[in-house]
Amino acid sequence: MNEQPARKTVLVVFGTRPEAIKMFPVVHALRADPRFRVVVCVSAQHRGMLDQVLAIAGIVPDHDLDLMRPDQTLDSLTAALLTGLGRVMDAERPDWVMVQGDTATAMAGALAAYYRKVPVAHVEAGLRSHNIYHPWPEEVNRKIIGSIAALHFAPTETAAAALRAENVAPGTIHVTGNTVIDALHWVTARIAAEPGLASGLADLATRFAGKRIIGVTSHRRENFGGGLEAIAQAIRTIAERQDVALIFPVHPNPNVGRVMDAALADLPNVALIEPLDYPHFARLLAMADIMLTDSGGVQEEAPALGKPVLVMRETTERPEGVEAGTALLVGTDPARIVTEIFTLLDDKSAYSRMAKAHNPFGDGKAAPRIVELVANAG
Ligand code: UD1
Ligand code: UDP
Image 1: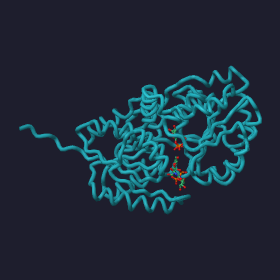
Image 2 (image 1 turned 90 degrees about the vertical axis):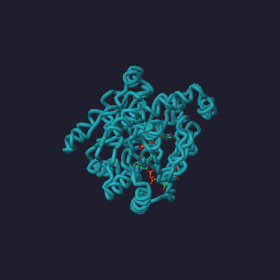
Image 3 (image 1 turned 45 degrees about the vertical axis):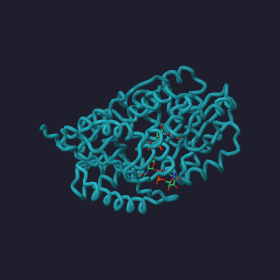
Image 4 (image 1 turned 180 degrees about the vertical axis):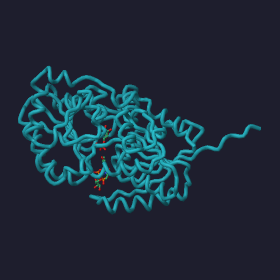
């Protein structure tokens, strides 16, 4: 009788919306592969926004720590993550722990694995802004993960070079592309097969027919206390133009909603709406003429779709979109945001220079590459 090689147990840990979006293609690929026993642990650092992604991706977690608390602090969240994830690792005894990106969940997952000497595979490794307060606390989270991980899946050659510059062993760094492109392709195909999955924006499309659509998202902690007010002020000025409409799914962090409701709720051409599930957000990306955002993931998706994206940050760890010409860093100064938006609205050649599809973040096959690399690792 043939001996079957032992299956590797991979514990996949995530907890927020963007991690879930970028991890579901990896979970799908791992689960389809008989070489693995796959255990999914969600911290539920996010609740509603995480559950939206789990539902569309068809993932039922094996462990759900249910950690989200309203307006949670970094200290209390991180402490709860470390003990909760450690307990799951002791129960499951994984061969590998896999984390994604730069959230508190990813950082605590890597640290808990390190405390048990379990090797860590890091998806979306090597992003660096070189400023520990922009984005905050993500830049330090990913540096911590980078110093622990045994396998670094860099989305781009730039990210791989950043790791080599930090003396990470070159043989442990692999350029795979970003799994967000896998996710975007997957959800686009799902919507094509089942248009009802993304039909919920029809009312807004009718209400704003004939106007140029600007999609907005904003949630960065470093913008609390001033930055969000500045962003809201810029949106008020943009909304004075009757030829534009802004669709803004508001992040449920109470610090965001408080500012945006107070500043924007009375404007007829600004729709402040609940967070969209991923198919509807993909639909918004398709509908929008311009995206205005401080999100990491949106900076990656917009270039893939050829949507000009103005990034409301001082620095970015994703320079590829800027280099490709689809993304522009505009910071949070209202005058600058308004000027750049008006230029795109009024100058056709400026718009068409930016509105070109590029794929600096991958070809949509990152997840199978990652799975093969984990299968072949020790
Ligand atoms: C987190 C990540 C950030 C990531 C962002 C994506 C950290 C430190 N921050 O920031 O890197 O870019 O997610 O969105 O890991 N809330 C809800 N429902 C939800 C989700 C959040 O009500 O589904 C509210 C809660 O009041 C919660 C608060 O938002 O306490 C903040 O959530 P948290 O995960 O701590 O921070 P984010 O700003 O979302
Ligand atoms: N997104 C979504 N619904 C929304 C807003 C964003 O599904 O209402 C998706 C978006 O397509 C991207 C991801 O969420 O893939 C980005 O998440 P977020 O901006 O919260 O976090 P970041 O990427 O900045 O860490």
